[in-house]
Amino acid sequence: MPRFGATWTVALLLVAGLGGTFLFCEYLIYFPTIFQCAWPAVSHGRAAGGDDMDGPAGRDRASQAVRAMVLSDTHLLGAVGGHWFDKLRREWQMERAFQTALWLLKPEIVFILGDIFDEGKWSSQKHWEDDVRRFHRMFRHSPDTELVVLVGNHDIGFHYEMDWFKLQRFEKVFNASSTRIVTKKGVNFLLVNSVALHGDGCPICQSVEKELMRLSKDLNCSLQNSQSVGSSGGSSLTESCEGAQLYPPSAPIMLQHYPLYRVSDASCTGQDAAPAEERHLLFREKYDVLSKEASQRLLQWFRPRLILSGHTHSGCEVLHESRFIEISVPSFSWRNRNNPSFILASVTPQHHALSKCFLPEESTVIGVYCSAGACLLLLLLLHCVCLKGLMQCLSLCLLGKHKSL
Image (cartoon, rainbow, N blue to C red):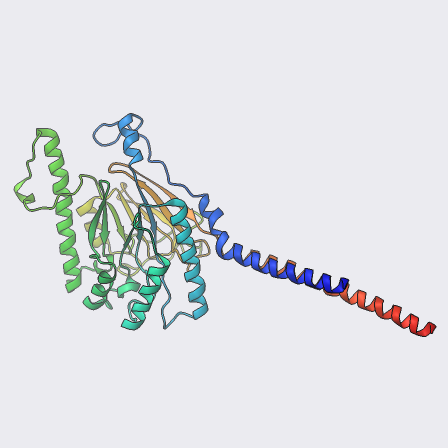
């Protein structure tokens, strides 16, 4: 009876240990990690228009900041190159991280900066529909949160692979044009289809550039109209602005998949930067980053106060022309990084503040599994040794009694 009780106790401890470790690593670990993240406070100072951010009007504007969550490069694995276990593991991780972030942080709008799918550039219609179904399950959200998705090269192919069918298939799924302006609480978010900015006159490139020029005109006319109203007390749009769509008069935040042109990641620092051995590798224009010409056109047309991009899978902060800040957002998938992360942005029409939220490291999860496994194995071995010693003791006792008879 004692042996039976000890065996069952050890068995229950093993089951409880395995179950507890699995529950912690696959579900609970996301809560304490993301709970440490918080929305950044909008920087104090003097806003456009002369309002003191420390005064009542400034505090009211700060309280009305848009809470935007930005992530990139989810790379949902497809049917061709994705192993079933790798697919299951990565999608579960991203789903739990995203759902936990929504529950704890409650963003008003979420941007995903392209490369949603890993094989969108060549997937069949059947596989595409399966990928889309899994995406909607993983990134489900309440009506209080708006999800905005940008297009990446893995979604429709690199420039030489993309066509109207793949682009329109992507736009149909997400019910919006890949190049447009999303306005929230007076903040203009400019979404750019950067895959089509090769400038070689291809039909999709011409269409996207034409739309960007129209949006640039609309934004500039909105600023002109605001300045005219403020100076003369009445509306006085110039003749060149007739028919323009007016947006809130604030410099846009530009979001795209490809980064603007830079030579390399040599100047990038931080725990989410590219590995040291990769930072000095030269970037290729129109493949790793946009061309110099396309980058200059975007900055000239829109003069954005902030650029957010993806594609490189690593974090970086770059200052273009000594005034335009660009933040490269790392990949959200553990398949691409040991430490995925996302951006939390508090944005008003005049100001913005950013913070980075890191997710649990893959090495930490593996370490917990290995430590728990080692402890449980040690417990099992200890039990077996004790049990073996008890059996030997009983055998010797029985053998002694037999001899005495």
